[in-house]
Image (cartoon, rainbow, N blue to C red; front, side, top):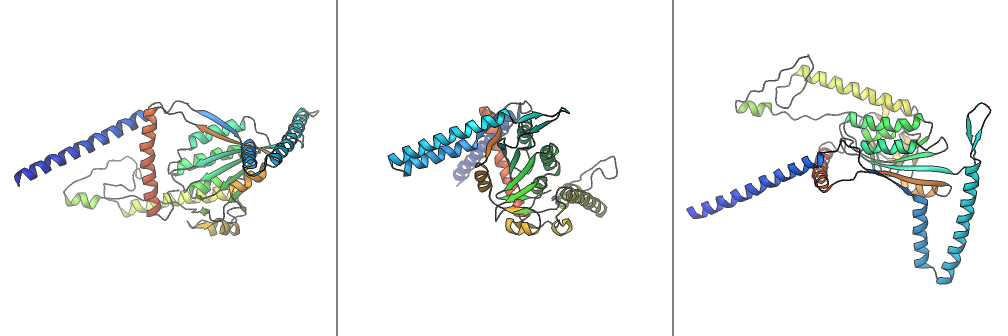
Length: 362
């Protein structure tokens, strides 16, 4: 029996050693992946959506049409494309006309352009680093006759992260360029903080919209520490430097102050939405509730029920649509580091969603 327990103990020791080494390896990879993140490395990818659709259509023609019909169809299509290119070049030549006062007007015959950006937000709104570069790139050539479309998918997160993301969208509005937001799945809390900046908000029928509220969830293990005679000393300078803590004993005064701070942020949230969507009854919708896209129309949270695919494809009929994406180039250690970090982020996101019925901090 003694030999059994000895062998079993050695087996457990091996497992524990392997686990410690695995954790150390992940920590090392994450550390290596974090090096150089401050460097501005990456590339901008511009995709002409119209051409993508044309290529797909031609592939379908090739699959379903007879040889003679296919040849005739492609010939007519090629002819039509040449006519469109010729008209586009002609319009470009007369697009800019100078006035006597030095200002410029744009000819209405100029073909409209749409720039499509995607934002899939996590709890920290970490994608804002790419979003700001994408918007800077678009604004370098866009004019008042163009449109910027943002596909947003986010359940919200930190106030400062999504506040910065919303400020990036304001840059488009400040240039008097039409800004449209499409929501196919969810734009709640911080996600809606971003969406409300748009001139027009479009959402799929069952997309989740709203969650206009603020929350914070802080565990406290002070009673557990006291049970084992563990004291925690919290030293601060400033009456409200720390209102609630994880380890220390929280007070009613600290809780009240924390709630007051949440209310201030909530009022800022409501004021921000009212600024861009004055048609919305903010007191009616700022309850933390969420609505489906269909119901959100009646609440004036969105303007139209439509998927992003429908909107983009229909726009391609008379608009040149470009998808703009900033992609970070990662080394092998960074790929492993980012993968480990993303796994942790997904775990935290899912845990918070379950704990708060899909609502987040902001």
